[in-house]
Image 1 (cartoon, rainbow, N blue to C red):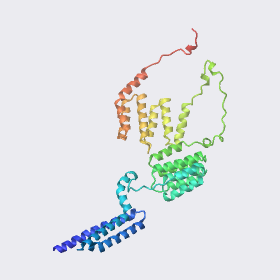
Image 2: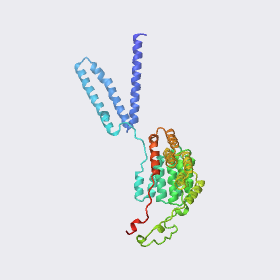
Image 3: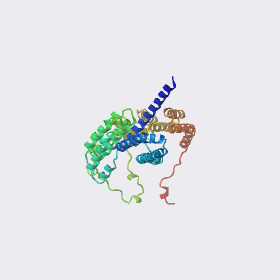
Image 4: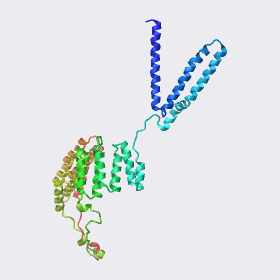
Length: 403
């Protein structure tokens, strides 16, 4: 390849590279410009100045006449001033931008987010319809925003007494794809609260909670919804205080401090057998009510001394699907407590605590279980010593007798 051809190719490549870079800078400047028309006008003036310099200043500087060459220098300076006047603000921004970006974030794009401050202000002033209209305007721009839907439904239910409208808003949110199970469960729990508190409609609240089970299957939120369904109050319980049936109370005992014995005025405790039967009947209808099953286990252990039945109930809780790890650890620790306190069974308690370590190896609960394993013999010994201590029998009402 000859030298002229090489120089031509090299010059073409360099020109192409500079041309592409220049075009990229122009496009980037247009995208970031607040006024593209003004920027285009500046580029037009710049092209005129540079063209004038190429047409007039070049021959003047190359002239053999010194006065013409000096004039060319002055013309070049004048053209430089003209370019500086055209681009002065842009040049100032280039110099000040690194410092300003320390405070305003520079070129980092701000994530667009809905603003509900105006709606909240109007709600506080009692302008509920205007607040709803403002929220709807924001939801038109951000149709999947959870906060906006919940705020709209809250105003509809609590301020406009429009529970059906709030239900439509919540269902619209739940039918949108992409929402996390936590947000869906939160919205439907709010809806269940409004059905219970504002409409006293237990069946509608049950349907809202059952919708959580359907939409958030195989999650802890479905288990919590099942738990709450088992705890829904009766219609009488949901009525407002002025609509409830009044209870008549007996007159209290007078001069109770002067009585020799107050045993007859102490309220009788509920029969443990009756309580156990009520829990069993309730669990037949709501087997996922973990709170009732845990109370039944306590009743079996403390009143009936049936540790085997108590452990069976707690094992059912451990095996319930989709329960939070924190609850499972609590129930396993309760089983270990029963095995130590009532059965003095060191091996069974050790196996139960080992299940915590195997089930949740990386959690803090595993460390606590291991620490408890190390101190298990001491716990067993302390329990045996406590059971071996017998208290003496003392004469009753000794302080009321005379010497």
